[in-house]
Length: 355
Image (cartoon, rainbow, N blue to C red):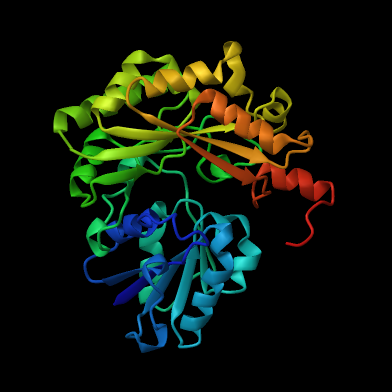
């Protein structure tokens, strides 16, 4: 049996790193399956000229959904079974079901073996429901199935204890921070060909004492293993509060961190439920500087277009970034993604123009 897994091209050509979810599922796929992984960011192949696979697996974010459906239609026109999973398909099940043969909702590891078995028997169910399982069941990703990228990728944990209104992470992965076994993470780091790695966790360090302790254990293991990789990760601003954590991160290879500062105003932070950023009278500038003192770059991300934003918010964000001494600034327009509390709120207010 043969399976082709496709990651659609991203709208932003500079956001290219290995499509980790496909490589993880490849690690769960038995050896009797001949696996081909296609990342359209590296170039769109002529699908019609490719050998016909027995099954195609697709994953997509909302921004990639239309392209995912185009790829699905291409293969289905040739009589190939197509399965789609990922966050968009999970949150838009009815829409996705109209365009593929089967939809996998939620985290796929718990259900992937059943999908493959049914595909072999030609009896795919329309929907497979994945569960949030133990991270020890997440296999080492098959990094060998794709060439070397500028950035490799790895996941050490899933979930985020925060619950920002615009974010779909908690709806998909939950608020419980679930960590992979440290030995698995270290082993996978050693398998990655790239010198620079993106840790794709939505919140690498967490927010509570036990979260921070677990992160320190991971960093110590990475130092002990001498993995010799430089990496970047998403963290919360509380990383600045622990000198030992910062020191260990730097020694473990941390090149930079991406922090969701979200808004330069208290009103904006309250609107998106990110009051965590200003607990205990937090000083953004001082926090950023403490991180940078350890040789770690800081990229700050802000959202523009909040209901409470006033004229001049763009300049206010730029002034805040300059005041804090950020090494990079990321500004996004507020976007109601399916499955988020922001989507539900705006839909209830009749502010979603089209589904």
